[in-house]
Length: 136
Image 1 (cartoon, rainbow, N blue to C red):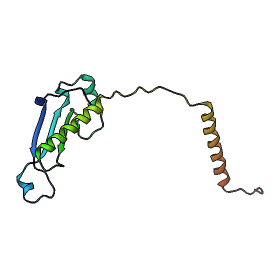
Image 2: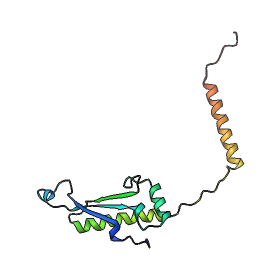
Image 3: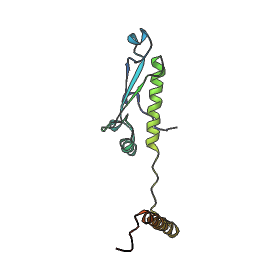
Image 4: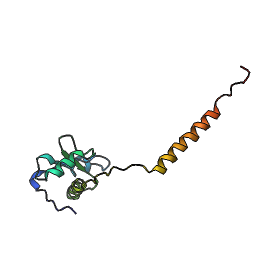
């Protein structure tokens, strides 16, 4: 669970009409919720803002604005909670610091094994070529 708290004033929640089947009700009632959160102009720590921009997520645009549309439930409040939960998951993902990669070298045995396989493969391919007659 994240220890960060995002003020309600930084969130932009908008009720929109949900698509799909649902009869006449779907055309009258705006039950889907669209949540917009500008991460770069928020109270989040700078290191999290940077990681949010680096996340490969189609819900985050180049300016760092996160747009989440929740429409799986038939009432507005449930969709609002679902959208907030998704935002929380994205921010938790950005909080995790990536591990630094330690440069390693392949072992001598693995290098030798690779070279042996290449040699065997080369020999197999050489044997597949046409044999030239000796009398030429």
